[in-house]
Image 1 (cartoon, helix red, strand yellow):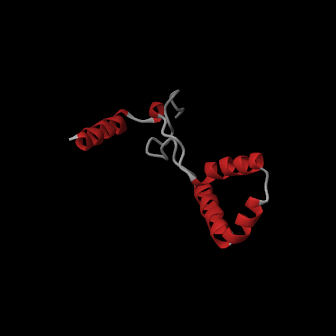
Image 2: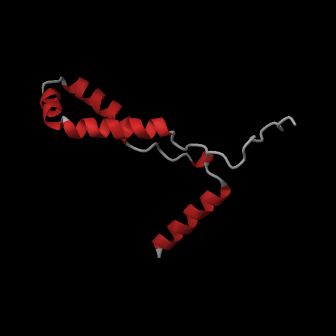
Length: 91
């Protein structure tokens, strides 16, 4: 049976925006590397030019911080949950 256009073959599959196992493992490995070599990295960091330090920090931040929330990718139910949460916080 062919799939209908715009309809997933597995409607209960992974949600949009869900990070892959590889991405999570890469993030954990990078955090371990930073923890294990923080002193050496700190010395190396101090010897870098300001422009290179800024570039490095921006690159690292992309791997250790969650992506920005894109409201266009949320379901109506998820948006309603956010609104309810914000209303409770406001009180």
